[in-house]
Length: 445
Image 1 (cartoon, rainbow, N blue to C red):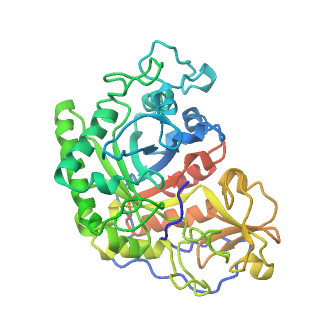
Image 2 (image 1 turned 120 degrees about the horizontal axis):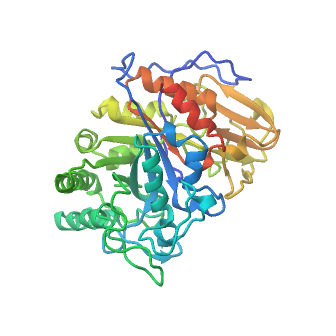
Image 3 (image 1 turned 60 degrees about the vertical axis):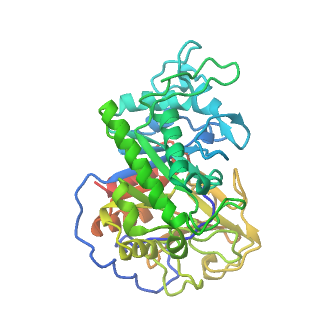
């Protein structure tokens, strides 16, 4: 799960009827330079979480059986860790790495993408092998290895610090995940030279955050801003060189902050995009139960009634990047497949902008629940067309989340402003029928 960072996007307020609304502000105008349409196809990126195979029991197979795989262009596998030595690595150690999930776990026939169970003699097992099978079934899919994330960005500043450290960092990631030279760990027979070759088509860099603290304890430097650009340049150079050897083109994308202050501290906007296929912008965790007052966690606009001084919105994030020189077609809007919740909420205003007693109870974490869990909760669903946001309220518990109506407005915004597409965190939050993914696919058709 992504942790709190701030940011939002601009959208069109579609003329879709809501159950109820509590805000009267008019939507902001689209960013200057918006166009009526952008060349298709749009990218539709979904994150597959390494740990989703455990309590959620969400397997790569379910990306197929839900119908999601046919509607995606990219899957980002979350996450690869970076060691104190500034290198990519694999290990079986709680909180540090899960090589067992990545490439050692043998899935049974009923768990496998193609219905064929793993055997002890095959070089590659685990999620990596299932992703390889999924790609064989859906040739349009690109699978990227996402590096970092909220928990594992601690040492990326060290890895990006010097030309030598950047060269070694990138080379280690290419060797491990593109060349597929996975280490043999413990008594498992899986892994070895070239065992994962062909699984991944590139990298997604999720440094959270250059120039400003994300997870407590992360290494942060003022020069991270310039070093981020240099790191992207090193990745692009080495990916091109390796691609010349294999006859393939390898992709490079990045997950970037939405809070304008974090953008200013850590991203040379005009300089980074030439190295990237596209960048995804966090369009969620704008508000959550770490704050005492309820609010929209992923609103497209900040309406006049929004009581927060920062006025975070997807609109604000998009405007920030466009003003910095980002090409619209390389901006991809992040959409949450989960809700954020508060409890002990006053009944006034249908629970919106009201004080709470803390986070609502979630299935796996307080204050958070998957979309498929949120929509099964009791309460009345409300829609705010000024913010382009939905919420559920039962008189005590308030849940802010995106649903198909919100997604229709966000995908319309992507199209009218010439943006590159959408990203979803994360696929395991959708329903078994892939309801939200289908809404995105319809909206971007």
